[in-house]
Image (cartoon, rainbow, N blue to C red; front, side, top):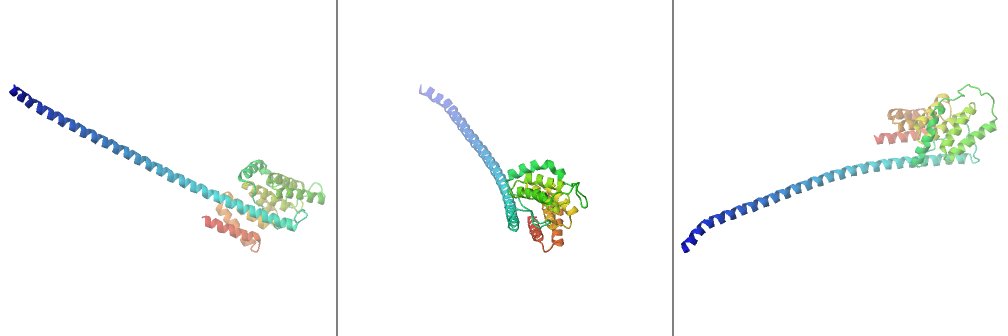
Length: 277
């Protein structure tokens, strides 16, 4: 009996050992598989983190670019506001009664005080009248059908200028166009063309403003508004991305009118353009 048991154990022992070895190998394989899965999972997490970091860098770059654009807009709006406030203040001080400035009197441009949204809306409203800002009846030497009363002419100009000074640039442009059409021989026409251009410039309608300033310079080259009109022509060209033309125009302001305030403003704008690259 004892011999039989011993013989049975001889057969069972190798089989048990083999089973134990296979079980251990399986366990090792499972552990290796788990480790491999963890490595793959870790690699995926690392890749995802890298992608998120890249996206975050891109977003930070976009935010910085938008902040820079916002600063440029704020700086431009501030400059235009200061320009408008100081120049209209000088006009009011020189003309406290609210009457029209002397024909050809040199004053520089008002600038945008509207918000960007209002400026865009006004520009859109003003755009359809672009054609009427171009040459109108009353070129040099033309005669009106009838001679208007000088008081009525001045009153019409004063009304348009008051509208401009009140910040209603769209109606101001309409009134100045009507003044030019109805009073083509008035000595205030060159002033009217200048302020017509300004009303468009303030509402960022630079193309039509450019046409008004160019018309003034071509038809009234001896006007005392010519330095300021030439200056603002350069401003319009710059806003329209005509950088080379803008530089040439601003340099011509300095060359033609070296002692004028327009020349000083042209020099300052040239410095800013150069620094902007």
